[in-house]
Image 1 (spheres, rainbow, N blue to C red):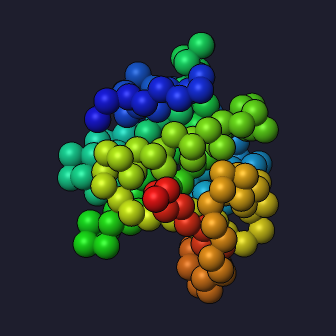
Image 2 (tube, rainbow, N blue to C red):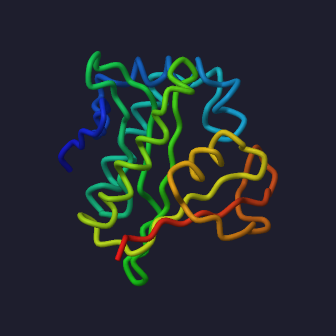
Length: 178
């Protein structure tokens, strides 16, 4: 998969050389990201990052998911991660997820991520629907989905697993413009 450049951001596959910064970004973000993404812990290591990158490469090869790093176009700094995953080729829809390291939050990175990856899902992957599924209470991600123009469709009960508990989730969708 080639990289995507959009409004000061570069989205590309992770390289093994990103592991140290990925682990650092994860540990920095436990307070904000860790609440919603259980893998984001204070013990996250470079080896954990390398194992994740291996999974990412396998899902890209299998065309079942596209997990990408979000990087600053200006500095090259790793700002977070995003994915088009849970790809359903029978019904042409997928999930769009994102996380932004704590030091880069509240700078429009997540919004620009949605704005960049939804068109990629439609125009390159052939999807007809992109879902953003957000744990109830994750007001920052909810605000991003709403600001992106995603349509709120409802609350799905028992939709996600967070820290060993089943939680409800807000379901938003984006469909291609006619």
